[in-house]
Image (cartoon, rainbow, N blue to C red; front, side, top):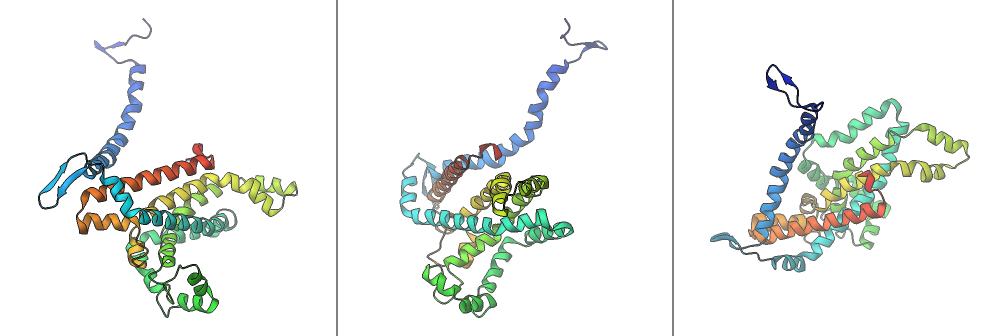
Length: 304
């Protein structure tokens, strides 16, 4: 038969079709192993830990106690909502700040494009912790930022919105959200830049030739074509910001504690491993649900 294996030198060579069928599985193997070792195994361990009972001295035993989940949610729901609120605010502010900058870099910067791109990613060469600690100096009393906020009435506005800590910017809701916005801003800029850089200038020229105003060109041409970058940037900013605990610890106060800081404390100080694991799963499910609703509402399932 034509599709039978060919005999070469007395040995039976596998057919081309059989060899081709193994190639996709071989290419997937490294990625599947990575997911199994660094994602599935930790998730299974965390899930198992969340339904254990006991203490750190006598040890923990898996008992299937799922009652820890409603208990953890009822005890820490304000921290969960606060984390989502801070992350959503940082994401929206980041998008407002990042979009004009990314558009300028992609369409207007010319030969300065690469220099601006380096400046955007330059903070990644510094530790996340150092960058956050620097904001304690920037927002400290007597600094330029604090003086300008006081002179321009910005401090009064923050007080009115209950975002500042009395007469200081540090250790306040504003400081936490400012730190989140700053630390995750490159994650918003880079996807937007990658999308806007691929825009065909002839489309914008065509819009102008059809007497579209600048706003109409942005609304009907630029914004729809940049949606993949918007969706990617908002997801890359919101997801890590919701679980962050460094900014709330270094820039906030006892009223700005986020859920990541609670989980860190339960794991490392209180040593209540089941409740910490349960909260981690609750946070994971909450983020997955919100992201799913967001992607569905945005109508961009094919873009992510």
